[in-house]
Length: 320
Ligand SMILES: [Zn+2]
Image 1 (cartoon, rainbow, N blue to C red):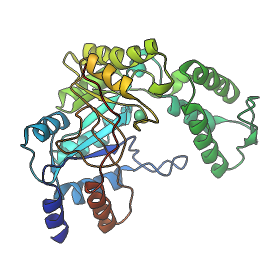
Image 2: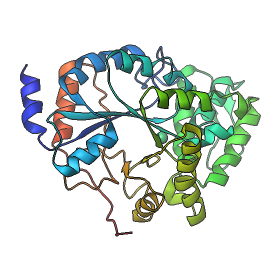
Image 3: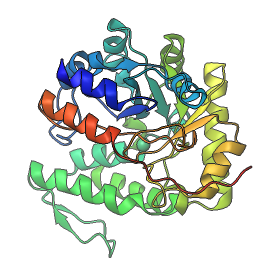
Image 4: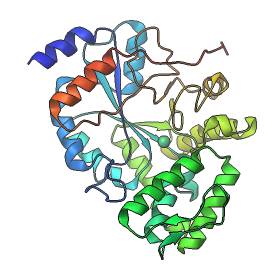
């Protein structure tokens, strides 16, 4: 197959890391951009059958020791969803494919992912208008499904770049207006995390509460980075060596201070969301990732090839 030959020649000493999030059984009309299970299984059968899928920690170490096979790829998931256990995990196991799951530890203390709280609240809002009485969030319509989709996107954008305290205040206001409770949003349980881990999948940390690290004070950043590792390690009874920066864009979402904090917390590698491919010059603490979104197989291959030729942006690092 021509695409396999192209991938073979372009991928020498290069590591492609794929990023996914929630993979619902069926497409959720409120979030139509999510990859659903049928689409995900097709990607596994078509795209990943052309690649050599390795565990991420092993691949990062082989990249830097010069022993990475051609067409090397890793599969990763961010955030933490209970339906991974019945959806993506069995689909990966059926094909003997490894993946690493980067999980927010707050959910094990009863705090659901903040964007899942928005989704749950907007779904349940009554009446034609969402009005929180907040100047930078003027009242807007939630009369139609399209309106609700837009409101989910708007709230995610507006709340993403707030401090943790301010974001929590607004989430509570939204939940009060919608008449829902954060406690009703599904979260992963400790037993489910242990289950994923015992199936041989990689477990990485993705902070506790999913803040933008650049909007955290020093104390919060240490708690979010190091505290999440300790919490996950206690649950799985083993070492958690990987970290995924929330939102993950170098400079916009994290800086050299956070890369240093990740090293000091004892992690061995970290992943961003900047597109591109890692080579031997890429810091193990800023491994880029990408998500193919095309519908047709040839287009996904094109995106993969283009990604193989993309050099990632990295923030400068200082030795710890
Ligand atoms: Zn995330």
